[in-house]
Amino acid sequence: MSRGCLAALFALAAATASAGELRPFTGDSLPAIQKQFAGRPFILTLWSLTCHHCVKELQTLGRLARADRGLPLVIVSTDGPAEAREIRAALKRFGLERFDTWVFADAVPDRLRFGIDPAWRGELPRSYLFDAAHRRTVHSGLMDEAQLRAWLKRQRFG
Amino acid sequence: MRWRNGWLCVSMALLPAMAMAQTHAEHQARAAEKPALAVGAALDGEGRLWLARVENRLLVVSHSTDGGRSFSPPVAVTPQPEAVTADAENRPKIAVGADGIVHVTWTQNLGKPMTGHIRYARSTDGGRSFSLPVILNDDRQVISHRFDALAVDDQRKSLWDGRGRVAVAWLDARGRSGRTANKSPQTDVGVYAALSQDGGARFAPNHRVADHSCQCCRTALTWTAAGPIAFWRHVFGRNIRDFAIADLNGGPVLRVTDDEWEIDGCPHHGGGIAVDGRGNLHIVWFTNGEKRKGIFHRRIAQTDFSKSASRLDMSAPLPLGDPARQAGHPAVVAQGDRVLLAWREFDGRRFSAWAMLSHDAGATWAPPRKLAEAAQQADYALPLVDAQQALVVWNTAAEGLRVLPVAEGRP
Image 1 (cartoon, rainbow over the protein chains, first blue to last red):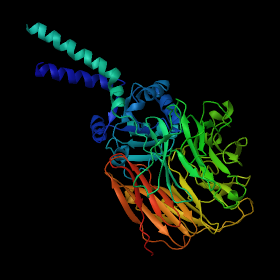
Image 2: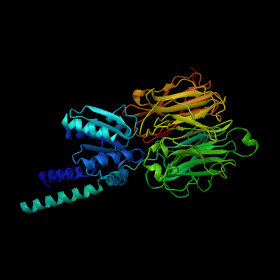
Image 3: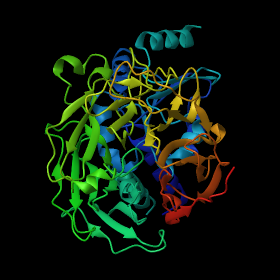
Image 4: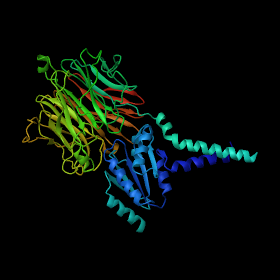
């Protein structure tokens, strides 16, 4: 296969991956996400199938997503790739499958957690609100929907 | 020729990309099946080390008579493979009564996230064979009955009457109803328990110990002279996730930490309890509260824990480990005046196992010691103590199961 052909293959694979595919989250993923949102605000939400409160968090985000087609949202599951099927089902249930969705993919998930934030002790849900300059505000536990809307409004309209 | 090459290129590019979207995660799944690293360990009255672990979806038990250098051939507790949860806050539990009966409990996942049954089996022939596993939760809905804790009566008197008492406690969502499901999340999970008076042959009907517990932190149990006492992360007020104890024989819920950790979320990080020879309780726990953050030990002086009027005499929380290295998942065991604490740290790359020993019922402590490091994933560090030995059992993905002696040096 020619080099051009290989490049086309990778380009297509990448394009397909960004449209609702569950991507493996590794040590390089957060910088890649920040690059993708360069100069733009976004919400990074971490959740797990084993987290009682995360169902509510996904519900809230799903409501927000229905009202806001351009919601800058990145969703990361801290489960493993082995749970891909359940993760996708949960995201679909709340209408979140069209967003950037990731799953922790490291034999030592703690390394990924530490890489995102050494102060994060694993409690879920965990959210990081990145402003346009990518200064981040951290929140443990459920996010308040009204506060989230207000934050988004501020980011967009100053 | 160019055209054909181009067509070939497009079709080759498209098809794998489409297939990739479907199966990428599944490939990952096969490559990274979650290891069942979390094990249960106990010492019996003769100093033998007992181990319960999951191998190929079977729960197996073995024991060591040489301090963990070698183990007996594993004996299957589960007659068929089943989804024994053995990861992080979930692990099989094993305990040996003064009568020599080996008791095992675990949580069986029911195929949906956050569902489970509490399973129990025992061996009356020194671990050579096990009874058919039973389900202890008498509510059989496919909901959460998880985070089992096990304790046996190791008081001498049970030898005299030939009966060992057994207690199992767990978190149970049976109180959840359509009415509560969409309201505040803290209203629908509680602590339930099952007690046996005959060495685990039969258990009394389940009874509710407390409402409003946190939903996904491990629980703990210890057997005092007055009976079993449970320890768990509770929900106080609207959403304060501090710890509580309760005497399983109908005692009140007593708050034993005041960290004021208010979080509308899951800490996934519980604690442990043990009773020393003087009847004092020792608790260890994690918090990320307003008042303090990290892992701590505290001693609660012996009193009648079955009375709500009991004023608890508690020592100041003693911080353990290095918060910068995420010191976490502490556990405690005690025998006589010997109290052993263990925890795990993580520096961003490697885990390490730590222990700290007291020879005077927790009044003073030898300096904390780092026992080992792990290159890959690692279970929590499990302390074990009796009059002769102080050990930490640590299961690690790269180095295997390690039994680490804790030096006896006095402070």
